[in-house]
Length: 187
Length: 49
Picture 1 (cartoon, rainbow over the protein chains, first blue to last red):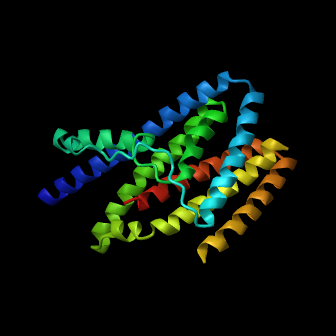
Picture 2 (picture 1 turned 60 degrees about the vertical axis):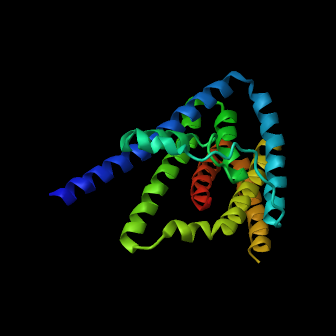
Picture 3 (picture 1 turned 135 degrees about the vertical axis):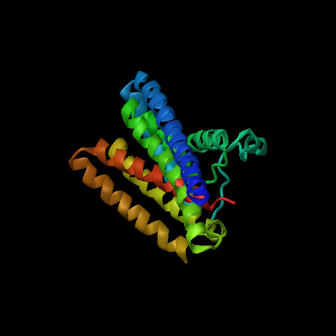
């Protein structure tokens, strides 16, 4: 009985965390898309062309091993939130990580999320782009925890050791996006 | 090794997607790439120390 209750409580916190993360992304994306829709299409296309070239340059340099630190606040989740209770912690942490901008960014690819949501110029499309980020980020943490419980091994440690690989793959994805966008938007 | 092997496929695939998108709905392709990039960024961030 006690074990079932503990399990239900854990699932509840994980659900709140994931939903908060997705919600933060959805709202941020909708707002960015709505603000972007105010700007004329020509302006957004011009900005998209320039950003596509920047993406190719950054992705290319990172792929070739040149490490360029992304602009970021580099803030960790405040430890005092833990003392606010598990559900509040899950909500706040989910909202913060789903928004992403105030936490550790780490990869230039992240900038494709808010800038893409903004330049797409539509609240719905912006919400889908940023909401995907929030949902995946929230679910990924839950998935890692589940794996750790099942495999009884520190999966997060294994992931941290793959940071270099993730950096190169993210740079490759940024290059891919930049090249495709430059052709579509720029030509 | 991975650095050299990741850049060329990325450029090639990007060019392929870009040119395919020119003939059809370009914005749809870019939107799909942005959604994929969002998922990719979220997964990559799990490796942050």
